[in-house]
Length: 173
Image (cartoon, rainbow, N blue to C red; front, side, top):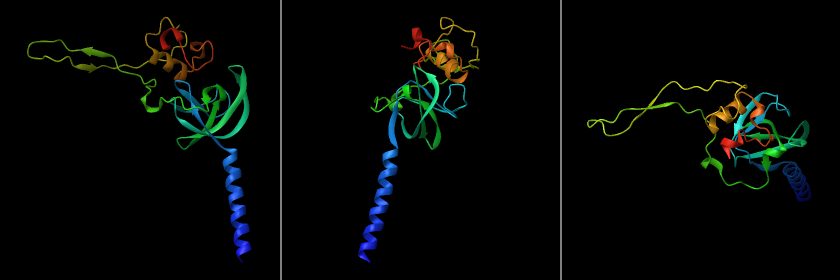
């Protein structure tokens, strides 16, 4: 009886170790990394991840050539599965995590006039929405956040000339 229990425990441990050996943890290193539904830049974006986010690599696959490599990873992050290009992940934690600000459209702000009765400047939100426009050049884009919006949301890939995940490097470096 003890021998059967030992053999069963050993087999269980072997299975657990083989599954653990097949998966690995990597970190997002690019500013905003898109998790896609297939290993191509033209595939639907499932979610976006901040630098420092951990992902579990489920398998290595070949996909669209990007940044001189066709290696993509099928990953699980935030309870969602998808594909990330290998150039956007690293084995070393970049150490930025939640402290990093990702592209989030910010509203235009109008400052209220300062009067003796009203001593503080109060921002007043107005309707601000960036519009997808892939014909804009980096010189015409005003902020780094808008450049990331054009690249990641609108998929204006011309914003990222060197395919490193950072658009309009004149604004975002």
